[in-house]
Image (tube, rainbow, N blue to C red; front, side, top):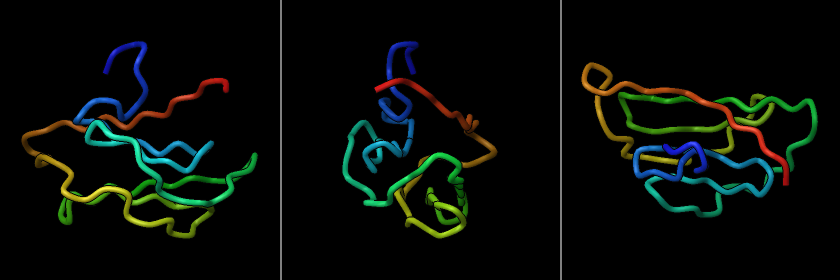
Length: 88
């Protein structure tokens, strides 16, 4: 990822943008959820390497599996969780 790009812009990055409900992964941005996120809400993330899925939660409730076929294996690929903030 470049210093000027967004999380998920690369083909190996994955992200969820709470401001518009879109997900960004495999180099493409698509709609994901209509959930309204408010100040103080909690967003959870589950990376399941056995099922190769990435799932998001909002205040403990599942939003759904955003991505499947997550590449790699934990013995061969390193994963780096990240959170980004910016103004709109």
